[in-house]
Image (cartoon, rainbow, N blue to C red):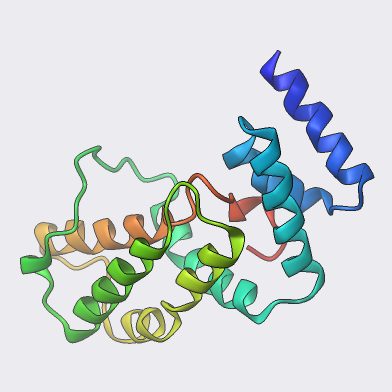
Length: 167
């Protein structure tokens, strides 16, 4: 029944003018609440159609961590251990992530998410330029993967960016 309702909502939103990719990206995370899903899909579609700089920045920031953790068997208890952050770029990215996470909750709008994710751009770029994620030391590698997993899950409950072209 829920699958049927979700597909009907998808068709309604597409018929109303929303792009199918934006609709699917939202329904993957917010399909259980049709009113919130419709509002979110319209906002995401406007960002996609308008070529939003924040959307592009957010997708750039989230794409690499998502690709790095996708398909990996990560433990459920994976948490970033702040005391295990070694490089200045790791610390900066972690602090930027914590600030972004505070802006994004289950009720966050697309604008909130895009703004929060885009705010990670500088720290993310520095991290990937200077830090080797797959370090030889297991604890260091685990902590870095933990940080990337945390960033990759920032949009969870709002938008599944993997449904959008270019991600």
